[in-house]
Length: 588
Image (cartoon, rainbow, N blue to C red; front, side):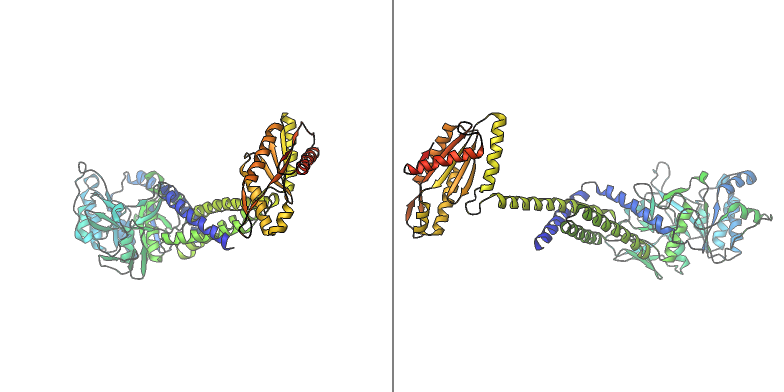
């Protein structure tokens, strides 16, 4: 058991090295891409069981409102005075916040009256927010402007692991100066897309000219929870905290959003109905804005403010902002599990897979239990995200475990192969001399004879007997006799070809099968062996020197016999003839 565990641990250690090289060879982006897709799948499933906040309402410029504006107002964009009237209308019900997912840039058709009217509502109401945007436009197009300090966030950064450079911009698209002068409720609507273009995260702060500016949704939720200070502390663990809210940030300063379903998850009120109501028309308007967070933004497909998110391919930007606020109010952000956790889980799963691979002989049981482990881990990652908002890596541990699985299969094959070789060796080898045993000799005689018949070649057989072995055994003891057997056996093996088959025939008798060797060559080999053995000394138990000699009988197919039994008999007869003639010689 210890040996098997050692195999598993060695395989895991080797796999760690392979996996490290794999993830640092440019393929880590590929793995991250697949991991992001599993995040989308988990969010798609979990979001069906998660309800969006009923305290968030969206006044939508949908396709119907866009058509109404063109037909009845006669222009697009809408006059900014209309948005000012909209604020006055909604404020009658005392909403918690109102936010425009729009950039009020420059003056529309030089209509300074409407611009002033809109700017005045920002001065009048301290719960109205609007958006600005940063970009990388060249200074040739637009000279970067300084922004007032009242829009900035002072960040006390205690973390050494977070880098905001991904959300650092070089230029700013100016909004109406009158709005900037009248309010500090202005936040950026910059977003963070992954490499595949899907929006999974959003920045809390962005950098512009070395200063930090808040994302609008963050600024809204920060204000809605009773905070007015423009100072924030980024904790050592990479979280922003205020009131009882915690926002975990990734290494680039982004918050990972939890999603509440596909588009249309929030209560939506078409803008055209509110315009009709404001104009005194009789229209059914089920609009309760009291204590609500109200967004005004575009959802019409033709206006192109659509994003791809984990839960929908066409998700309005205003709903992204609403989702962001919803996350903050519910303390519902996703936290990415640290790398150490991923490595630990990978090792645990790999240990389980390694144990299954070595423990079970049945391939079907092994595959079933491995797949069951994969399924169990997948369910575990779903539950961690559903109940604890924890994004546990799914892809890396499964790839890691699969590599271990393959490695353990190879190890298991090698162990089996080694065991088979050991069993085969025990079944075909004589334990004392290390030569092939009599059973193997009989098999090889049959095989060699069939080969010689098929290809019409010769082969020879030498049978050897150690002279006076019984007397030697009686004189010096069985231990010395065993030493003599091993000595003769190894001498025979060293002095024949690698293709020749040396066997222990029985007792002190040994045999050599010589494929593709004729009679004369076999006689020459036998005489060489006889002479070599006779010239060597062997030490007895009392350290005396003794001489050992052998007698040999030679027979050749097809010259002497046509069957293995006849060939053995003739070689044996010639062996006894050599013994009868005085031993230490070859009988042929």
